[in-house]
Length: 467
Ligand code: FAD
Image (cartoon, rainbow, N blue to C red; front, side):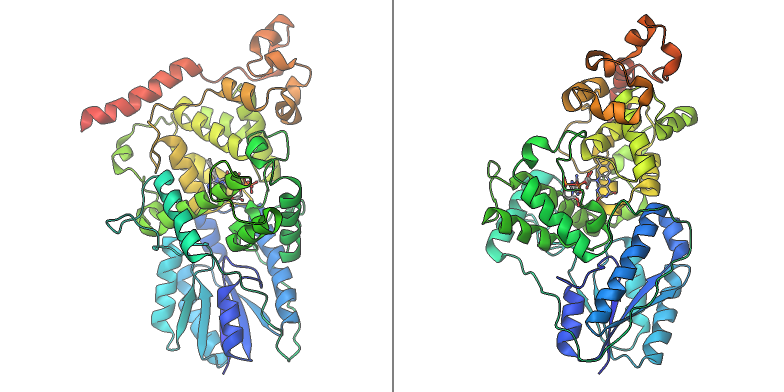
C-alpha cells in the first residue's frame, strides 16, 4: 500500500496530521508539492515569500528524506491543471490513498474538490492549520461569530473543554531515500535574513518564549524594539503550527493563560486573532473573492489618487511614521503590526483609497503574506470588515507616532532625511525643517489629516443616507 501526502501550506514534519496519519497507516509513503507559478502571480504573492517557500521546500525535502519519504516537486501553471497532473502521478506511482491538510482559500477549496472528483482513490483531509477546527466554534444559531470578542471567549472555552493535540514527528521508515534539489521558477527576492526550515522556526519560537513572551503585553506595540515574535513567515507557510505555539507557551509558563490579566495571554490572543480570520474566510467565501465583509460598504466612493497612492507605496507621504513603515516593508518584506494598522488606516481614511489596493501592495511585498490575515487586517482598518468599532475610528498618524515611537528611533532608521530632527519634532517635522531651512530634505504632507478625517467620516455617513 503506497500512500501519498500532498503538502501545501503545511511545510513541516512535526505536528502534521496528514503526514502523521499516512505514516501510521502505511510503511510506504511518498510526498508531493505542486508548484503553480501562474496561480502564485494571480494571487499576487511576493517574490520574497517565493524565495522563502523555495528554501523551506528544500529543508522539507531533506527532513522527509530522513524519514524515508521522498518529496517530488511537480509544476503546472494554474490550479485547474492540478487534478490531471496529480491523477497521472498517482497512477504512475501506484498510490492507493491521498492525505492532505485543509487549505482555506476559495480557489484552493475548488482545486481540492476537483482533485477529489478526478482521483478514484480515498482522499483524507485533516485540520492542520488551526488549533480549533473550522466550523466548530459557532453562535447559538449555529453561525460563525462576526465579532472578535465573543468569538475569542467561545474559542477559549472550546480549548478548555477539548484541549489540543500536538503530534510528534512520525517514526522514520526503514527504507533510505534522497532529498531532491528544489528549484522553483519565477521572480524571487532574497529572503536569507530569515532562516529556513523547521529547526530554525522552532529555535525562533523557543527564543521568543524565553526572551520576550513575558514582556509581550507591554512591548508588542513598539516597532523600534523586538517585542513581537516575528514568527509570521513560518506560520504563513505552515513551517510552524499554532499547536506548537500553544505548547511553547505551556513549556515557558507552565499552563496556558486563559484570562486577560494572565502572563502570556496577550500573545495567545494573537493566535486567536489568526484563527478568527481563518474561520471567517471559510465561513464567508466572499472574503476570498475581493468582496467586503460588510456588503453595504461596497458602495463607498473611494478616490482614484494615483499620485498619493504612489507616495504611500514609496514612503513619501510626508508623514514620518507612515513613510518609515512603508520603506521598511519594501526593503525587508516585513512590517510590525502597529505599523500595519497605521499605514492601512492612513491609506483608507486619510487618502481615501480603496483597501483592495493596499491589500494587494502588502501581498506583493510581505514575506508573511497570507489571505485570511491580510484581508482581515485591511478590512478591519478600512471599516468594511468584521469589527465592532465604529467607522469613525480614524488613526491620527502623528499621535500614534508619539505614543509608539516616542524617541523617533524607528523613524530615524528608515527616514534618514530626518536623522537629526529632535524627538519632540520628528512626528510632524515640517515646522522644524522650515525653521532650519531644510524644507527640501523631506516630502511635504500629501494630505491634511484633520480635513481628511472629516471627509472619511462623511464618506461613511453617506452610506447611511442610502439605507
Ligand atoms: P506576533 O505579535 O508575535 O503574533 C504571533 C502570531 O499571531 C503572528 O505571527 C500571526 O500569525 C498571528 N497574528 C498576530 N496578529 C494577528 C492579526 N491581527 N491577525 C491575524 N493573525 C495575527 N499577518 C500575517 O501573518 N500575514 C499577513 O498578510 C498580514 N497582513 C496584515 C495586514 C494588515 C493591514 C494588518 C493590520 C495586519 C496584518 N497581519 C498579517 C497581522 C499581523 O500584523 C501580523 O501577523 C504580525 O505583525 C506578525 O508579526 P509577529 O509574527 O511578530 O506577530
